[in-house]
Length: 489
Image (cartoon, rainbow, N blue to C red; front, top):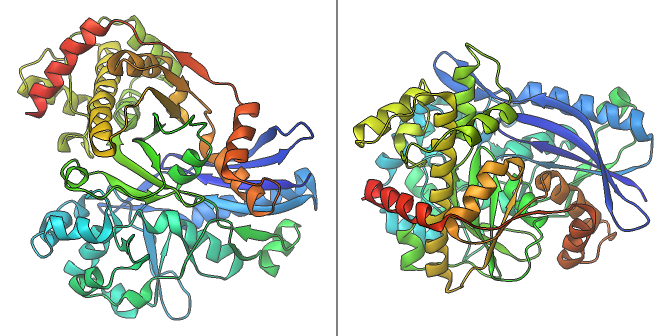
């Protein structure tokens, strides 16, 4: 059978993955290219190097042509959520997209919510109110009187930009639209009341299309440059979590998932959005999934804490993530608990210092060694999962019996075991490459090689083994959970 190329872009790195279904119905994958993405600090503002990402993507397509010639059926792109670029009437990008962690955007949410009450915003969008959302980034452009808005004809989200660069066609895929807090799930349209409050014409937004849509074929220029044929570029679950959850081998309605990476996106799959007073109170979002599903979830801080600590520690010593995990496992628990979602950890100058200061202010033991920092982070993430699990059960009316951790965090044995211990539920870890897998298999489904979402997940189960973690040490975790509740007030 033919091949598919997944371009999978995360906040730390991007990769190009070639995939195909073999005769036994298993997915075979090969990473062709990997490169850092990363945010760039320019004059105090954080941006994405979108042109650099595009260059690496074209290099990936050339590598694909070298690997399999004309035996390639489609390309699909997934990326992190919310971020966008603005284009003028000639189709030119006005500036590199601002990154969601840029500190200039932190005050925009609070100011906007004085103009539109939080309750009304949730009623219109059913989305988690989070400072990183596209709505607040767009509001920040307006409050700064950014001159780009005066000549903007089109707003394109990150996967839209890259699809446009490849094909010359503009569209927004449904799962990504729902990350923006600009889209109304009841009317299935861009919400005009929000744009009126922003003072921006909603005509800058693109037509929203479902996964499996052909955006267009590769341009002649790219075909000449890479030596590949004019293959179609398809929409997949363009938000990376949508692709990851698509490939999550969830056995029925009683399992939660955690898409674990820089963020921990924890939730359930539902046939309809869950819009209620409790869902609003607990700040849950309803985001689009594939095949008519919705991802009812909460966007939690994830391995960002460890990533930022490692970035600081690398200034004095080289540490791999495997080495850090080993140090954390060997360290004794010091009993300190942090709330991973506290504002202190959004973008501190030094994450280890921010954690130490937080523990000190809360009257807790301050971690000293690298291992103690790692263990404190991992224990706190697991306790955050327990807290969120209870909220999911309350808003959904479901009694959850297991958790499936997918993505890069599923490789972290300490995190997976702690998650099982803290929640008291069995945890099944894998697949690690869930996002790329979902991307590839949604492409295959769009081209009728897979008949349904159930068949897609059957392919995942055949192709990738899971690792099981059984809960233990409940007494310790009950006590630790009490400390988290005290901290959260």
